Length: 107
Picture (cartoon, helix red, strand yellow):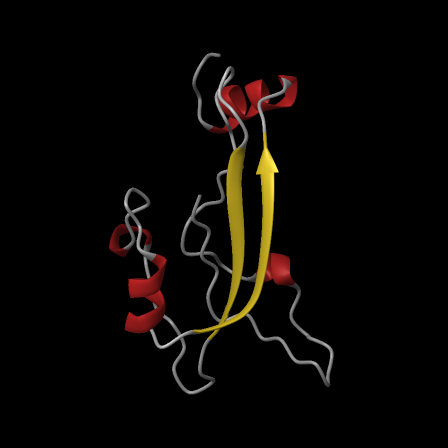
């Protein structure tokens, strides 16, 4: 899963004046959707800081989801890892709704 929403203003010393839902994302969000019968799937969420002087300008066609290389992306855009979270998920009945409603596939 790759979700990229660049140029989010965050500060530890002052509140953001821009609601996050008003920001545009580079890629549409696709929720985790493990297939039925497979073991737990592992997911990673990264928070990557960018230079204030170098906002990212990306479009959906510049980023391939398949075989995406995070290290290359970070190096190319001079990003700095600031936060990470891990979780795992296994198929349950709620995943069927993701296949039907978001991926438009019958399950």
